[in-house]
Figure (cartoon, helix red, strand yellow):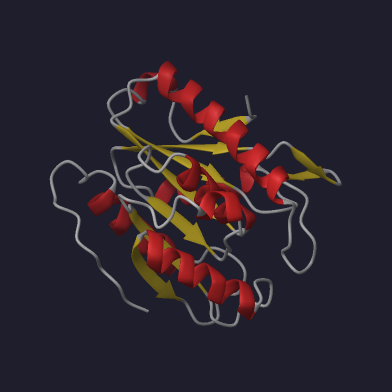
Length: 219
């Protein structure tokens, strides 16, 4: 089980939608707390800590500066994440589960979605990338694509252009993609982006049982 922090006390969680938050490389779960106040009513967030040690901080798997990673390490981290999510679902009466990942956390959110494609109502990926996996690609495109919000700054120096293009291809083939860019934001989560995330979650997480999901693209 991963270390975690919650956006609401235990008594207030039943009957809400669970949003699993995944931080970036060399960070920890506290970095995701800034998003808590922006979440719509009815969404409970849990920010998890990656189990891979990066100095005195954490990540999800070993990552080199070119964003290359060992596919087996990524799959192992994804399996451990899904085990934690299953445990959280068993502990609380949540109406559904969505994912939100920043930077390497986006790679983890996508990996969880690829491993359990029917397990999530929606997903959010911020300033991140998608790890290539020949094994997982054998079962793709995903049969039931979920709504996915992808936010970034075009001038983000951390995620290189090849990774952006590879991520775009995967998202367009496997999700119902909402893409947004935020000039001047850099490699972080911006205030305007948080407002857009709240709208997305209100429609596609909380409204999953009320609205027929249709594809919505923009950039």
